[in-house]
Image (cartoon, rainbow over all chains, first blue to last red; front, side):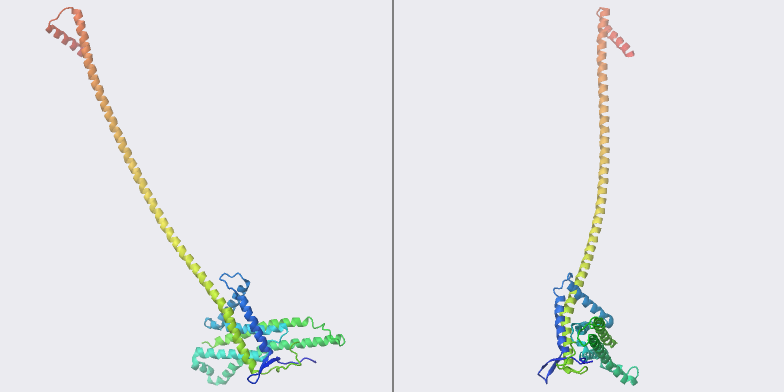
Length: 239
Length: 173
């Protein structure tokens, strides 16, 4: 198959300090998402009133209440401070995957993105563990129920963010690859049928159905899974 | 197929770019702050304010109801009191009227008795008067008749004898 090459994100530009900071697509689209979300926030919370009459306010309230109840049900009332973080994670993940609908490279199809988030989650899990059990209780947790399990406990602790990061990255990247493979195949089929003429007939239809699954469904599902796992693992270290 | 890039430099499919990692974390934290300050906090504040107001409204309504109940109880007590007073007044009035009417009747009876007595006295007097008048007239007539019959002068003794006889006859009748 000529022309199909599986690559990472494009390097958009390079800031010539500290030995050259390469800014990839991933980061640029993240900035765009931040900008769009910022504007959305301003629109949604414009002139809030006690008696809501505007649709935007109702949407804003619905979002906040849904997020609140989600965090409360999976983390408990004493973790309500995590709501903005979970919100940000969900928003970034969802929008980061959905930009593929605009023909952009998904932010979440970059292993650096999902792994960074997973590392943050990992740090939060450890931080919450130390905060709740004390440094002694936290370390003691690694030799329970028997000290023999220490290596396994450590491995399991590190496998959590690894699996989270790879799961999210894998799902979105695979969707992107499969979509482009199908595109390539359909383009090949078109040129075969029309004798070398590049008339994109077969590219219409099937990719749209695939996009419904890979872009919309997977994007929403993976954002949800990532947030749920983050919440559950952080709250798991409570007792 | 935007990501099939030939000319521009690309990262490998799976690679670690430390700057991307750092910027991704920074971006997530920035987004977190944006959502917190421009969506979560204002909406939360507004929801709390609304809840506060609803609670206030309910509390005020409860207070108003309690006050109304109190006023009602007061009013009912007053009404009962007023009824009692009215009853007492009515009773007093009727009692007074009763006694007054008795008084009037008694007075009237007394008056009537007095009038009857007076009338009787007067009748008695008149009778007496009539009786003495009649006595005089009769004695006059008798005297004249006797004079005419006898056609003579009587001695004063005969005169008196005769008179007494006539009166005595009259009285016997």
